[in-house]
Image 1 (cartoon, helix red, strand yellow):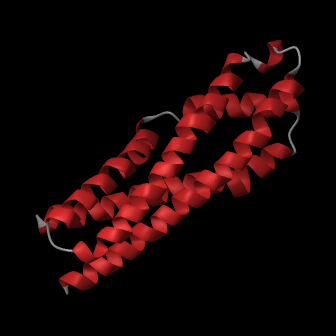
Image 2 (image 1 turned 30 degrees about the vertical axis):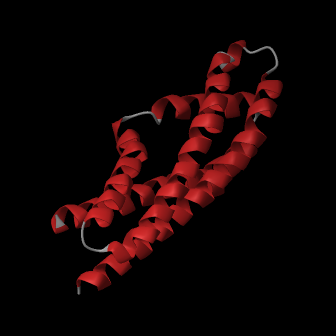
Length: 166
């Protein structure tokens, strides 16, 4: 049981950190770089990213973080290391905030962008970009902050958990 607790908490922390890094990189590098791009280039690049990003590595981190964190919370509740449980639960709640934002806001915006068609065939590409960019950037920043806070909580949970077993 102790090994499963340790492995699940480490896996939760790593996968949550990977997701926090991804969303943060979009917030401080990708979207600011694309801000200077022309409308057609912006739409083309975002459409390509939205297709490419849905792969096994992304899904392992995106869904794995949720599963590993829920498992870590369950095992902490049932076993040793209960001192870490509040931090694991806080991490889980914050990760769920990010998950809901992604599912309810960012993915539908990505779908709308895809539905607009190929950038070379869009009559008013500037309007398509305008409907997408600012909302996507704002909500990506919010989810990056929530996910980073979840990562911080899980990192602290690891420390508390380690101290409780020492």
